[in-house]
Image (cartoon, rainbow, N blue to C red):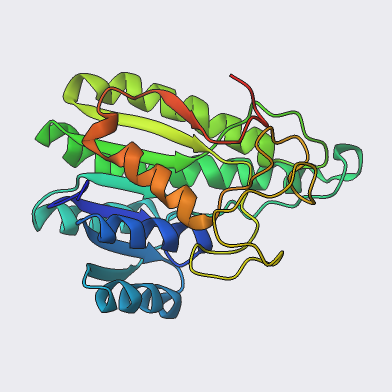
Length: 255
């Protein structure tokens, strides 16, 4: 197992991506600490992990509360250390409105929330990781696309990428890696579900199918596929990858 004997904290673990990543980390041998604002959603994910033989712990934590994030990280670190941090929290963005019609406060809100949340979690876990001389910090980000009507989301993703670069530069000498994952979005199904188009999970959609325009492969990653990339990024197989974007957009964003 790629993450055997590791300890991971997944922030936003009650959501679609966060829960998929948490389950994948547990499947690969990690003890997973699930955090988020809605305890029932976290308990549901934890129950599923335990049913599959994994180890999961739940804590209700608001990532915008710096002191609460630090207290939780301290408690996890005191119980054996923190190896992996994955931030899957949402940024409460407003999409679909052109910038000319968007109030500045609505534009700025996702930028402020995204940067505040990731700064809080990265600094909280980074203090412990840098002392131990190892660790991985991951987040969903990006910012190189050119897509209209995204409000402040695009700027938030770009800001996260910049923050990750600086964190990687400062934490790298202590053996801590920091990277971000760039996804084209997922079609709303898990690898265990029947796809809306009737195809088997993982089967490639036809090029030009709804939601796949611009993808060279014609395939949007399922949440499970996103989680598999997150497993690789957190594992020792990616030990030389830091300050880097892990691009699995199917060619929608070309490097």
